[in-house]
Image 1 (cartoon, helix red, strand yellow):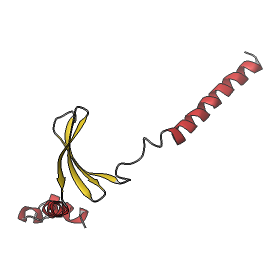
Image 2 (cartoon, rainbow, N blue to C red; image 1 turned 135 degrees about the vertical axis):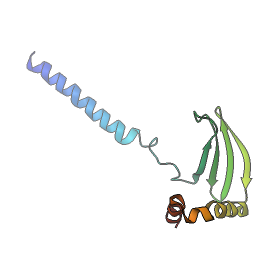
Image 3 (cartoon, one colour; image 1 turned 90 degrees about the horizontal axis):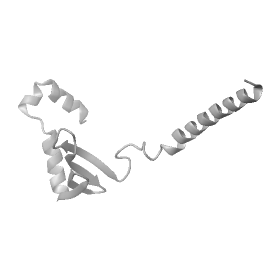
Image 4 (cartoon, rainbow, N blue to C red; image 1 turned 60 degrees about the horizontal axis):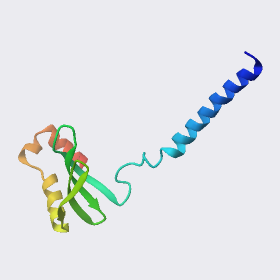
Length: 114
């Protein structure tokens, strides 16, 4: 191989590395945005089958709380929860029971929701 052949191979390798860097740095950014970083926040998701094709989502959009059903590429609004229902739901979720006082899971729930 001549000097020119080595130069071409080195140039192609460097070009591929630069293109990979640019693609990773700027091209993947919209796909790597974390969930819940904007106005829409998924509070809870409950899969209804083992594959996760259908599920129930609890989504907060601004001040509204929506219960959505997702299945086979379709989304259905099941219920729009009011502010009172949302407050009652959060109280029931974090309410301490007698069993929680003496279990490790109850102890973790206390520290997690402070």
